Length: 429
Image 1 (tube, rainbow, N blue to C red):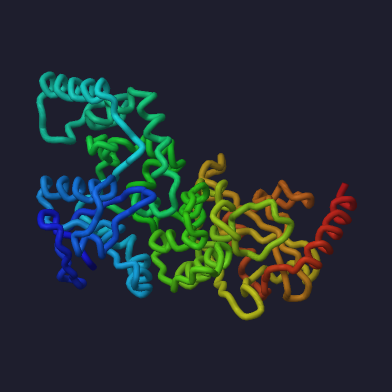
Image 2: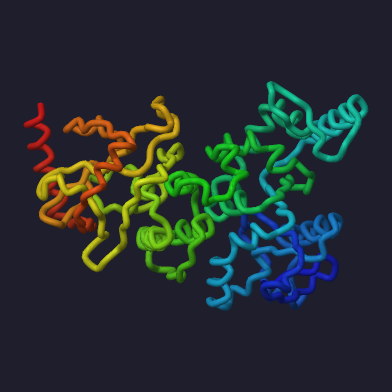
């Protein structure tokens, strides 16, 4: 790991257990950023990019940190091997940092807002005393810091904060979720607050529940983690998959040029190698037919409320003839069949110990299958009006199974499926 000295602006490389404590920067890249070579040779031109590096180092040094990691200059992007290692390690690097500084270049405090914030903090300290920077006040049964108390009472400020482009980019998702300590700064490096202070505004901007920002990622089901990226963008199309590697604790080679769909499906295959979480298949799309793997994170936009059952679980894996997937023996070997997944929506009004499972529909012939009606997950919403299945019945359902192979259908199969589906729906009317 290459780190930048916060006082001398010299680089040093460290390995594994020798890595010292360090601060880390999260920011949105501008049109002209300064790279490793320019910083090392002291040839970086004056401008916003250099000021950003210098101010970050100054902030880290004033906080007592000798080293900082900044993605624009601490990676030598001329080396594809170094770039690949950095991308596969980045979540871990943010996670292990002592503090993360989030620089929002498109957010500005007005002089009046800065004055009002200072006056509010000073008045509360004079009134209640101080026990440190995170002294809390109580509002509506919720403990919050003085900064949060002031910030949450400024609706225009919260709106402007939530409109920052940083909240829409793919790479900044892991930079939000991984660090244990995080401070936000405006364009002039005025401190806005901590992630904890601003959690209400961050949740409103990202649609990520406040508690999800504070727990280990493995405690959140796969579909919900995917939903975090549903509305995010990246400059290079494949990065919409690569920027999620750390969220799922997987690594894979970077193949720029493979396209976003191929990269995202490779990511899902890597996830399957480590997890039996069936919420991976709980996505929706307006495509008429598909395999079990989603084409992009947008398909998980409505999957942010899912939770999984601990049991039972299927064993599934990708093969050269499709995704090998076990289904109950009693289902027909031809036609449309329901497949109940080992997950449910967390806001179901059913008792939590006995909830309803989500359901996808497959068209199967012998042991060959593909997914149809990709727009649905609720069993009762299908034309066939499948019954809701509770977790105790799901266990019984999976006692005797056979394997089928789910693959991506071709154009002719999609057209034929549409014809068969229209016939089935007419028969059910």
